[in-house]
Structure formats: C-alpha cells, structure tokens
Length: 432
Ligand code: HEM
Image (cartoon, rainbow, N blue to C red):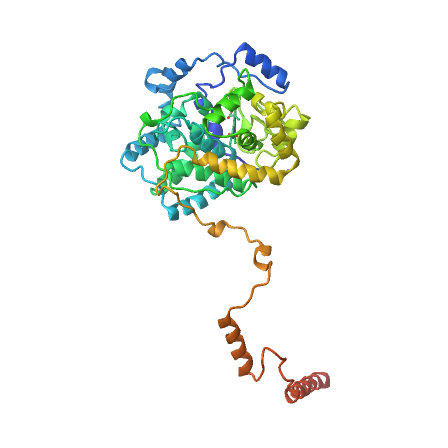
C-alpha cells in the first residue's frame, strides 16, 4: 500500500479544538450505535453538552478554556482570521479566475507536501452543508459563503478540528487577494478529491464571501453521526439542503478518505493498524485501508465488515440498512464508475449550495497545466484536412516535381551516385 505523510500541523493542533463536541448521545442512540456495529467507539467525555451550552462555548470571551487558546499556537491563525474578517467587510467580491488557477496549483503542492486531502474535503463540505433551502435570503440561508472562517462557526461542535484546515489554506488566501474564502474552501475540497484519485468535479467559481461573524449560521445544521434514527436524521438534514437519497449515499462515499479522531468528534478508535504510523499525525480510525485514496472501498468495506479496525458510524451503516439508500450503496460497492459519476455530480451540487455567484452564472477555470495527457484523446477519429492545408501540401509536392495523388518519380541517377559513394567509403576503410 502506498503510504503517505499527512499534515503534522494537524496533529500539533488537534487537541486545541476539542473543547466542544457535536455528538450528544442519548441512551437510545448509544444502543442503536452499539447494535449497528461492534466497531463503533462511542463518543467520550463530552456526551451531554446541550446545544445552548455548546453555543456558550463558542464565545471565547465567556469561557476560560477558549481564552487559553488565545495564547496557544492557534493565536496567529485567529489573529489573521480576525484581520481577514475585518478586511472582508469591505472586500467580499467574487474570485479572479487567473488567481483561482494559481491557487489551485498551490493547493496541489500543499496536498503533495502535507497529505491533508481528507480535512480539506471536510472543510468544503462543512462550509456548504449549512444550507437551508427554506430560507431565501443570502447569507441567512447558509451554504458555501466562507462563513466557516469565523471563529464562532469554527467553534461549532461539528467543526472540531477544522481550524487546522483553515490554518493550512490561510497562506494561500493571503497570497491571492482575488480569491474568496468561499471559493478557496470549495476549490481545496474538489482539488483534494481529484488529487486523491477521484473523479473530475464540474466546478464553477465566483462565490461571494459573507463579511462578518454575524452572518454565520446557527449551530446544529450539520448531521450528527449517532442520532436515534440515522436514516430519518440524514433525510431531515440533507433534504433541508435540497439533496436526495442518491446524493446522500454518493456524498457519504467521501468517507473513503480520512479518519475520525475521538479527541475531535468523539468517534473512532484512538489508533488502528492503519493509522498508528500515520501517514502524518498518527492515530484515529479510518473507514478504509487506503484512506488517502479516493475509490469505492468505503462501500465495499461497510458491506463486508470484515475488519474491526475500520470505522462504521451509525450513519454509514444505515446506507446498507435503509431500503432506498441500499439500492445506491450496493450499486456503488460493485461499480466504481457509477459511484464516481454520481459523486462528481453530487459534490458539484453541494459546493454550490447557498452560494451567491458574481457573475451570477459563475466562472469556470480551465484545466491548463494540471490536465493529464490522454493519448486516446488526440488519436481517436480521423479528421478531414482543411482546404488551406491541402493546398499547402500540394504546393510542397509540386515544388519537388511530384503530386500528392501519385508517388514521386524515382531518381535513378541519385540512387546510383549514393551506392557508388557507399562502396568507395567501404573500399577506403577496408583497404586500410
Ligand atoms: C452523512 C452524514 C455525515 C456524518 C454524520 C459525518 C460525520 C463525520 C465524522 C464524525 C467525522 C470525523 C471527524 C473527526 O473526528 O475528525 C467525519 C470526517 C470526515 N467527513 Fe464526514 N460526515 C458526514 C458526511 C460527510 C460528507 C457529505 C462528506 C464530504 C462530501 C464528508 C467528508 C468527511 C471527511 C473527508 C472526513 C475525514 C476528515 C479527516 O480525516 O480529517 N462527510 N465525518
């Protein structure tokens, strides 16, 4: 198995964001989780956090542990974050295509050096996944608007650990003033999927940023991993985003990447044989063996459940239990192409949720340097030559006394002279 080396920044900061949890586990959810899979590790210490108390946690000024963070390694990030938010009250314009393209190359470099693919995917998903289709007004409706950069939203329990992702992309944001956070988060996520071997995602850009923490959505819009009735919960949350059963199953397939860490979400083992040596910051529990490779192994592994070291959340397990979800989960376990196609469409849709585009139709960025060379693309199918090209070829033939319609006449005299020259050379060398 190809092994990679993930971000050490993630590890060094991982504990700092664990002051809140998003998985309040009722007795019912505990039993449903345990019944669902013996592999489940239940959320630790922070089980009984009510939503009002977790909201309290998001206010650093009123909570001592978060005050401590201000003198932690996160300080520079939070400062630059605050600076950015102050700046963004005046500069919430949409992104510049040329800068987006360069930023994409920088993200590729970041991925190559830190192998942070999973957390960048989660960053994009958590910015977009707050969308509420029943609210028309932007940015109240939530979605891909860059609000996740603000401390208050980063401190939502569901976003535990994502401060590390923001820290990774912040230097790229600082370099490209013409790229919005909203676009950068989605660009990073789509690039991570593609670079991990996943499908090409038909993205568009031009998302406008929200400008102040007051524009952040309220806590609780993202899904929980261990709700009492996982299928109902997934439908409630994803239908609110305007997504359907097929899209729920396809998007869940993103868990083919990454790990769950008990100190962040409360889910997963502290380490497994697949994570104990990293790549990068060791630990956590992955859903798949090759958790930096985007493929359909998530669906195969959940179906087979042959390895105690692989994670199955209640919301993963239900994909093979609910009759409607199961149709898609079975299909994706068997057919990676079908999964890739549906995933790419669903991911693009997710990335646009709630976004305000400028221009309204959005902008595409050309593939350019990053595009892989595909020989078949250039060799398949015969193409008719243009008239100008035919004329040029005819003129070149005629200049040497020939025609494209018949072969050139044989020049016997020239051939005899060449044979004589070769023989003379050989005689000279052999004679010596
Ligand atoms: C269906 C409902 C979902 C639930 C309940 C859920 C829950 C979780 C949980 C508990 C974690 C572990 C976080 C941690 O401890 O660091 C996680 C990680 C992750 N999630 Fe989800 N998720 C869901 C859907 C999605 C979707 C739709 C995507 C992307 C399209 C996604 C992408 C990821 C990725 C890539 C990770 C790994 C992050 C890392 O390794 O740092 N998830 N998710």
